[in-house]
Image (cartoon, rainbow, N blue to C red; front, top):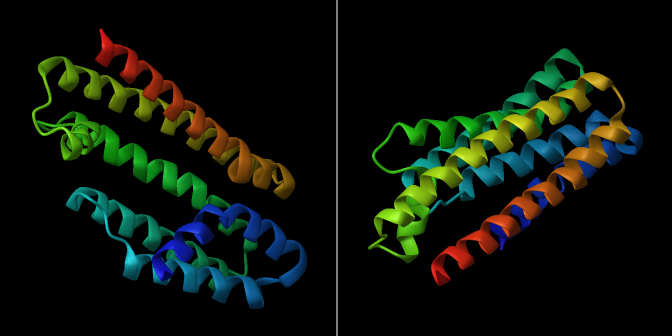
Length: 182
């Protein structure tokens, strides 16, 4: 249950930061966020060792941003967590393109171990699409940080970004199902 609560808290991070900066202040917000990231670090379990490593790196990035924000008394650093997440996910997906199996192929093989050559090619292309997405999404997340409007930052990183992720996943699922039928 702790694992699911921390996942929910991480997803709600932009809303928590927005509310926290407006009402609670760093005295409450920093320990709360730090605790969530520490719990996430301790409870993260990926289906692949590479995912586990990057999942823990993402939690460590959150811990580092909270700690640096407290030390420097600079709350705007908390806004950079979505940028760090996109950067780390880009590194994960992009680095897998140089490996024998891309990260999407590895995930696909969990449910379909005997992936045909067309499936291997398709998963490589999907990995490339996700790389482009992470650059685009991370760039917009960075823009919202630099813009200085916390409301815009929360809207994009706590809503629009998730809608774009869902849209990309939905499109990919639709394309995959059509390709499997043909």
